[in-house]
Structure formats: C-alpha cells, structure tokens
Length: 377
Image (tube, rainbow, N blue to C red; front, top):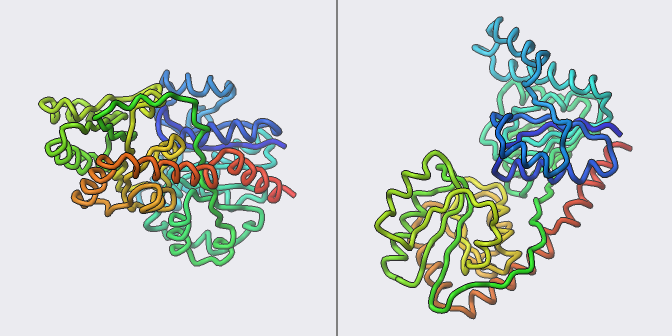
C-alpha cells in the first residue's frame, strides 16, 4: 500500500519524535512517502534525525516549484487577506492532492500541531488518519462548515493523544459523524535503558525537560525553584531544553548554583540517572511524554493539571497534580517528596506500573496497525 505521510517535524519536541516513530512503524509493511512541513528544512540536527530513521526520500511540503507556485498564485489573488479558512483549505487541498497523485496514494496520514493544517484530507475519497497534537480552542467557521457535511468521512479517523484533548475538540464541532471518528491513542515512552541510579546521599535533584517557551511555564518553574532552594539547601533544580531565551534565564540564576539551565541535552538518560523528582508545571500539555519517560525510570512526578497530564500522572499515586499557576502547591509537593525517600520509591513504582499498563510501544503500535487495517478494508 502506498502511504503519503504528511507531518510537522522539527529537530526537537514531541511532534517531531512522534512523526519519526510512526514512520518506523508504517514503513515496515508499506511504501511510505514522507512529506514534512518545517521551518528547519535545512537544519543539520533535523537531517541527522531523519538519517537515523533511514528517511532519505523526504519531501518538503512547500519546498518544491509546484507547491511554491500554488502558494504564490493564491497570495497573488489575495485570497488569504479576507478568507483565512478558505485560503488554507484551497491551498492545502491543491498541494495535498498533488502529492497524492504523484505517489499514487492508497492511504493518507497527517500528523499536525494545528488542526487547520492538512484539513482537506477529510474531503478525499481515499482512507486517511489525522493525528492531532495540539488543543483547539476554536475551529475556523469555514472549516467547521466543511466538517459538518460528513462527506467521505466513513473511512477517516481523528486520533488524539489524550481524552481531554479529544473531548475539547468534540465540543467544538457539530457533526455527529465526525465525533464518531474521534479516538484516543496515547503516545508511548521507549523502554527504559538499564541504568545505575546515581542519586547522591543527602542531595535531591529535581529534573525538567522542555523548550524554554511560555507554554512550558518557565517563570513559575523558576519561582518554585527559588523558593525550594532557599529553604532546602540539599535540593537542586535542572531544566534541560533550549530556546532563544536560554541565556536570559541563565543570567537570572547566576548567583544560585543549585538552579541550572543545561540547554539541549543529547543524552537524557544521563539526567534520569541522577533525578529524584520530575517536575513539569506546563501551561499547555496534551499528554506529557517526558513525564511518562520519567515514570518508566520510576521517578515520581510533580505536574500541572494541564489537559492530558492528569491522565498520565495519577494524583497521589505516581506523583502529585497541581494547579498550573499556583506556586505554593508545587513547592509543598516537591518538599514532601524530597523529605520522604520511602514515598518517592513507592510513587516511582506506581508510576512504572502505569507506564507498563498504558504507555508501552507494543500497545501503541497495535492500536495504529489495527486502525490502518480497519480503514483500508
């Protein structure tokens, strides 16, 4: 079967990682033609990631003369200025159809950080899966109207990574046919590597992974870290992840050696070895794969109640779930775990059980394989 696989990919981040993992799965039994949308098209880190997954035939969504001409002429007639939804529908419809015809597609898969991208696949006759990684707060009026028709929807599926994300989307669309096609398939964490924990006696390390952007809540994280380290000299905080704001945050903590911004980290395993607590106060998190990875290493988690995180971390069982912007509950829960090794061990074990029951690769792969087979029958 020929599968054209559209997706948003960047050198870092969960959406790009998901794209590559699904490529590995579907390329085992099908002819897959990867088409990626990215502003990092010529980034060396991205090329390295694609090469690691043996992807040599990748095409860029707006990276060839045909697709660039389509966008140019639509801009020329100024459709975008007044009708954003219609413009995106028309542009993506033409571009996606061109790729599907070029590769004689039998099946289409899209993996998107925003629902407006790749939307026209719902109107194609061939079977398709639309995987959504973001949370929508509204749906463009034109797109909502198109969705409500339900045409060609019987051989389509919308996949979400958490029930909370799925339920929010379903509340925004009117079509009952579309709602019937919505399913949840959580992402998985890779099996934990065999490691020797290197936690030091009398020292507690609180770890966070994520880009240093507003939606990861770095200012609340920093306030929590300052409060905790001021009162507890044995505790240190590490944020692994980067952005253009990295140096700014490093300057903010230059006088506190127990709050560290280590930037992009190639080998997360080296940080999991030393971590006692995983901390993720994110504003916007549809699932929270880093928290699941921490659970796979039996590390208890302190997380926000954002979207899908409470579905990953069981409050009071594998960690603690706190209100997104409230500093005091984070401080209280981190200090509680730091002071009680038996509690850390117990919650770590419970988190590992949840990981094995819900977030392993075999379960994820079976769900996607069964879905593709059912839609292509």
